[in-house]
Image (tube, rainbow, N blue to C red; front, side, top):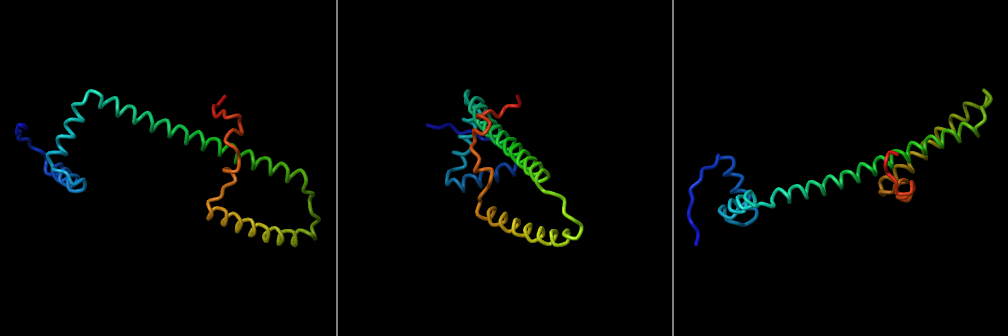
Amino acid sequence: MRDRMNVYFPPEMLRQIADLADRKKLSRSAIVEAAVASFLSPDGGDKREAALARRLDRLTRQVQRLERDLGVTAETLALFVRFWLTITPPLPHDAQASAQAKGRERYEGFIETLGRRLQKGQSFLREIPDDINGGDTSDG
């Protein structure tokens, strides 16, 4: 047996309840009953806290992955620049124009290759094992 209770809601909240009831194919009473039961539930706060903790853990892992990827990217660029500057001799003035033309051609090829890899979802960073730093993603 159920007892009847008359309650008053703001019009916008009534529209939200009605919309949810229609989407879930439930009665408005069932929606309000579930909301009140959730509010009165002693473990409701614990459930919200656990859900929040899971979300924070996932965000922490994502930030750690971003930090790792950024570190790998910076080190890769620094290593390449050091290597390139070390092995590339300066060009004589009369060879610079042809070298610049060849450089532009090679750069265009690089950009095309990069675009194809990104379109296919390929990533250099995905080729690097997760445990590249021994699994340590801490600051120390």
